Amino acid sequence: MVHALVTGPAIGETISVEKKKEMSAHNIKPFQRALATKVLLRTLGPLLIGVKGELPTHIKGIALDSRAVKKGFLFIAMKGEHTSGERFIEQALKKGATCIMVEKDGDKARQAPSVVVVEDIRKSAGIAASTFYGEPTAQVPVVAVTGTNGKTTFTYLMETILREAGLNPGVIGTVSYRLGEREWPSSLTTPDPVTLQKTMREMVTGGADIILVEASSHALAQKRLWGSRIKCAVFTNMTRDHLDYHKTMDNYFLAKQSLFLDYGPEISAFNIDDPYGHILYLRAKGKKITYSLEHEATINPTELLVDLNGIDMVLDLYGKSINISSRLLGRFNVYNILAAISASLCLGIPSSAIQKGIYECQHIPGRMERICEESPVIAFVDYAHTPDAVERVIREVKGFAPGRIITVIGCGGERDTGKRPLMGYIPTRLSDLTIFTSDNPRSEDPLKIIGDMLEGLRQEDVSIQLPRLSILPQRPYKVIVDREEAIRSAINEAHPGDTVLVLGKGHETYQLIGGKKRYFDDRKIVKDSLKERGLC
Picture 1 (spheres, rainbow, N blue to C red):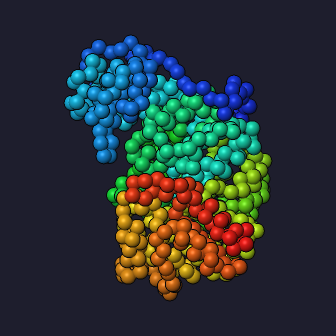
Picture 2 (tube, rainbow, N blue to C red):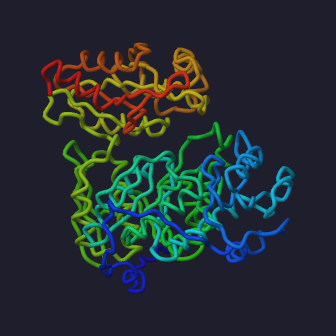
Picture 3 (cartoon, rainbow, N blue to C red):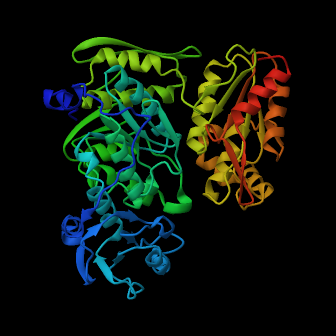
């Protein structure tokens, strides 16, 4: 196996020159233009089947949502999972749309004066949006990361590394979208293609030198990144998640794989300790870089220490030995750091910026986020919401926790029900006490969700799936449906030296119950509970 270290000057020089910023990152002006319709259609190439009616000379905007349509807009009648944009063509026309885009079998746009018929509307939407917004990814490099876990941590690490290198990164991710001092909430990890291209254009206009994108499996399956050029693609790992949408692990993998096979990144980085990562490494074309703790790779730590104080390791970078120190906790964060280092090497970032950036990135919102570090009760809030992530987090804490481990956990409603028994089984085998509670139940009965989790304690096939845990005794558990009460109970139960893990929601500041969204922040509840006991 060959693992080539790519450090060519062409890659490094692409983004290492400091740009003069035309405007500050917190004063981004909205993008406005009128694009000749024929120019836009020309970029669709073979995806364009034909045109019905008389085309408007120019397009003044693009919308996937009829409510966002304005006069002179192109309305893309996208077919969604639950509904179709074709149902809203009439509404779009009333709001001023002068052109409608439909897929080849669309038959509800007959009343429109101008109709563009395409072969694949998802691909066409991405290309059209990229063209309309001036192809932002042709102007700055894009780093796209995909994987079940680690995407958000990766982008935060890269953000600090790139800033230390003198660059101004834009970030499109789960927690928020960010550029310089400006930060705005994200509705989706990876937004729809029009919002994505619009956001990237605003970031480029606002002075971004490079853009980091978390590429979710939903986004890849729905081709939301189509029309984007990818400089560097990164694969972190893949374990069970989102099977309510993808149905099978094979489909889930194919969605992840598309980033590397369909988008033609210039260079790709893979975690080859993950079996899916190794498969992707073998299948991907172009330049590649690998990282590993267990196999020969481009990047292997020669020394590694992981404890309650963080991570220290030694790597061979650019032909010299480099010390890497981080305040992040856990072996899984070693992989996230190695992913960020791999991407940095792909971009030619100096080792000094890599070192300092990793050290300066001291916490990730809702990712093993310690609450009140001075407290004798160790408390963490983490986003872990898959069986693999839950097991990894608890195992890591067991490695340094001086006392008992108390885990607060639930499962989201209207999501993969098949993982619920696993999510019930794992913490009761690894924690000293598990408190089952609600997560984001949405329209489901929280007690029904918890009941599905508790089934894992009784189902023999669950222990067969997890033989490494079946040899461990089942530990005590409680059911407290109200999440705030459950967290307070965990804190009150804890003694000095014990560790409380609140899992599932991480950075989220809301809870979805019965179709309603209410303010709720695990971190605040934990902190308030510690203060009430005089422990913070």
